[in-house]
Image (cartoon, rainbow, N blue to C red):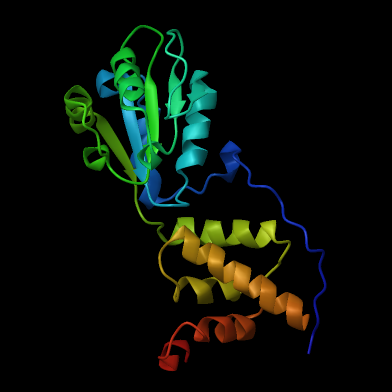
Length: 221
């Protein structure tokens, strides 16, 4: 049995433009951000599940337009620059968010928010903010398509310093949930299994790891 040794190092995530995984699932969101500054009210909410690339895409926008980053729980209310506020659905200051949305349409301003859920569902007891959230423009990153999911897998393998056999990624793509966390998890488990046994990340190893998640072994024949 061939054995594979590698250093247990992890590369940090890259938010470079070339590192963003493009595909049909994020095409509409990319087009919406590219339409800046022609957003309705100069504000946009970028919505998507964990790991679909919201932070990456928002960071590229912020770099392009010279946006400042603010915390959803409160911060600077001064004017003069576009603003990026991330993970708004995880908790926000209602008065602060209301004022930032109102300020978005002023000259030199603008506002990009990111969240996992649509703004219509964010809880607030401030009626004026509720009306703003119901009307704000939304762009959604959908669940990863095959192109994006393959790129996520390749990036995670690279971060773990793993070079899988050529048939491993196509094998995984046909069998995992269509989500970034599922891709991260299978790479993590393959990394652990390979490290413990000093075996290469092959289709055989991938099959053994994935079989632990299902009772229907016919899926792997």
